Amino acid sequence: MRLLICTDRLGALASSDAGAALGRAFVAVRPGVEVAVVPLAAGGDDLRQALAELGDDAVVVTGPAADAPEPGIDTQSSTLALGRDLAAVLADGPRRVVVDLTSVRTHDGGAGLLAALGARADVPLDAGVGGLSGLTHVDLDTAREAVGATELVAAIHPEQLGDMLLGLRGLTARRGHATGADPALMLATDASLGALAGALGVQDGPGMGAAGGALVALTALGAWFTSGPALCAQVAHLEQTAAAADVVVTGADHLDFVRRGGPVVGEVISLAERTLRPCVVVARTVEVSSRELRTFGAEIAYALGGGPLLDAAELTARAAGMAGSWTW
Image (cartoon, rainbow, N blue to C red; front, side):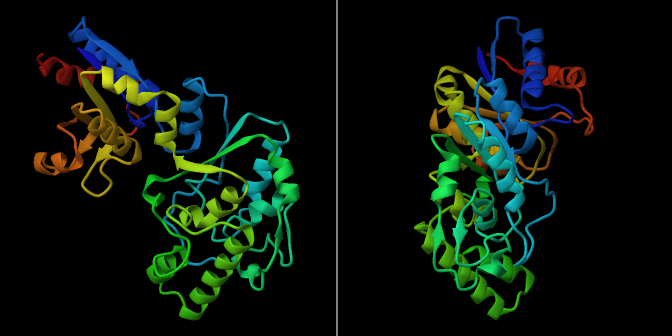
């Protein structure tokens, strides 16, 4: 039996540590089992760690931590600080930089980021979307020189991969309607973001409305975008590994019908479906029925229990019963 284990963070354990702890549980009760552990992560320090463990030399630049939900229309918020961090990294000429946008909550279309890299315009780029009114031209020469030959990758939340920038389903409409914003403000903000995208030569499309539109600026600089789990899977050539496995195991702290375990679980289930492999989900808590679970694409889910500080030894011990129940 060959198992592929790709989990999200479980308790106090990052992806690779959680996967290794689960693998030890299977090996202990089934000595002949072959286990491959591949770390995946959506963003933040976990993404940086996962890529490093996969042997990728990309430098990860992460936006400021933000646990709160997306705000309304903040006309003064700016990606200037993120741009300064990116500029500092680019000065060393790395082969590839991953810009983690999963925590970005601004609304400026990445204008501040461009300003930090030296871009110039006929209006201030670092004053938030409120300062973009009347924009007609952006000079990216200095910003593009700063990027040089570095490959830029933008990592966004999987749920935002389809988000548009403009219009009735765009960034401003989504945030504005959710918070009851003034319609006049919404129209003006949408127009300013449209002017920015036009000046940068970026066409609106799925994903452009992610992370407050920051993807627009990065796209103008030649970046391509994906989600954190998909990027890790690509670096690890995970589809080939999954095709050689008999069962795929994934996991997260919580499995419910709304979040469905989060982005890592979603990516692994999708991978298992593409490679026609059964997928098993483990979590500290499971709040879905077997029928609901099958609509996700998973075969079965196991509730392991444990608290938020669950460590490796406890996870292995809790998973032993599950591992011992399998027959093949």
